[in-house]
Image (tube, rainbow, N blue to C red; front, side):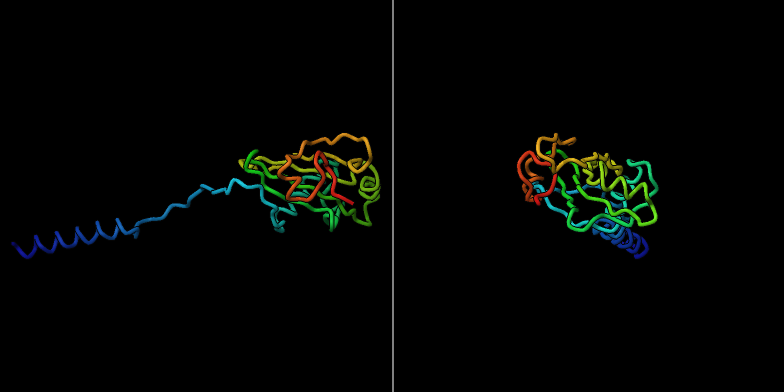
Amino acid sequence: MNPKVLSVLVLLGGSLLLTACGSGPKTASTSTTTTGVTQNLVLTPAVRKSLLDAAAAYHQLPASDYVGLRPGTIYYAFDPATNSYYAAAGLNASPHSVQAQVGTQDDGAYNLFLRAASIKTWTVYDDGLGGVQGTECPLTIPRAVLKVWNWKAKSCFPPS
């Protein structure tokens, strides 16, 4: 066989082999895997900020009117059965915002959050009276989420 033809065949074969081995351009995968089990999640700084921003907007105040989420009141989970994220948190008002301080003492003391896995914005539900006997929850939280949060069945407020 002609040495030039042999060289071209070797080069082509090597190129095909490298391409088959994955040396070509990579594309990012957008798929996610779920275990099918509701998971209690760690609250990252980005999620914390998104919850605070959503709650502030819901209460028609700037996020700067709050200094953060109230420790001991924060819950975050993913439920594969509904393909949704659930969160709950109280707000810490800034000492410089009388309006936020009044709101966190009254009806805006506790918030529930819901967002579908396919979107990035939270829907906020005010649950300021959630711990009061006989009040109705503004959001039905799935039993599996309540279980990983260690909340009572049909509850929408953390145990005291």
